[in-house]
Length: 493
Ligand code: MN
Image (cartoon, rainbow, N blue to C red; front, top):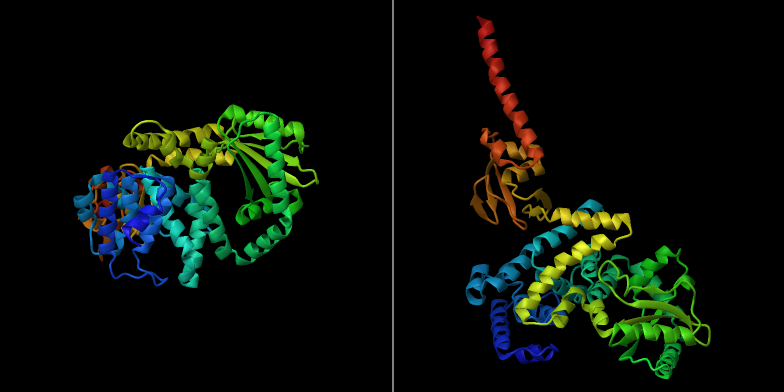
């Protein structure tokens, strides 16, 4: 793909200056990846380009799109992060760096619930900048779209990771568009049999429904016009396979209990029009009792807003109707990134607001949660913001309190590793053992053959109670040991 084609695939109109930046990043990444081929047989460079197009669809901020074009350069080419920093400045370099660090995390032992939760939190904590997560999600979405070219076992691992880590993050950020696609793409790889079964069930249940939906659409348009309710658009939507699968689980597998297989979306300009539309629809169509949900007055925990109601058409088919404004619709698809469009003011300012909003959203989540488990999880996120997440060279995650040192890290891996710690490398460079670790650091302990001598200083340099109690124990024993030998010496006389 050349640069003109790339730009033409992005809806947003960039300024000349922004276009120049994008062109520069495009050419730079193309040159860096030259000669590299993907599993699919196409040029590697097609991957960052496609990821950048995906990202630009929800967040057309030039530095973020540029960073997406560059996101695999430090990891997969000879060009270093420093060179990117020199060419593109600190903002873009730190985005690329954040994405590179997230890429080092590997999911193993996915059965361990605590581990999975930890990974999700690490994403959130390491990415002080929400844009890093958005780039990572765009990267993953493109990898999922092209997963058929990868080895079978690797497909499964990546799809599991997507289902357990990436899709829930997209959901938490309210990016429905990405969440839905990530879920369906990974569902069919992780659980192929269930996918086929659910898909067939859905197809069967939808038989003849598209005609009925068209009729309902016409009918609702007429109702709204008759009642003088203004609306912008009426759209049909069919339930996604994975979403249906989850709901079937909840309703004992009975598809007849699921009323939102097909939904009609009424899109309006204003919130007041949403309520007028609801009134008009209830006046003319028979509704299913107990199914009116006002997520405008009480939004879902991820910020989702809409009014849902369930009605019968004239042939006793059941449909869900979802009523929302254009902005609510955009927010449901693009989540947090929609703030980019709706906040007034200059762009840097909007991004700043987006970041503030992200923190705010986390806090709001806690207030809106009814389910105690969900509430606890949200609290944990807050708690974990005071924690750092560091990685072993193999990509395992350790969470430690802020200010933790390699001593804490070593003892958290294995009690004996601390006693044999000769030196430590952080991100490939030697550092002192009391070096303050940061989220995303890759920490490698260099072991000696014999136990090292531990001084009293270690007690001050360790921050975790785990490391300190082990050191204290060692010091006591060590001192007692000397004392005992002295006693023996004296007793010999
Ligand atoms: Mn990538």
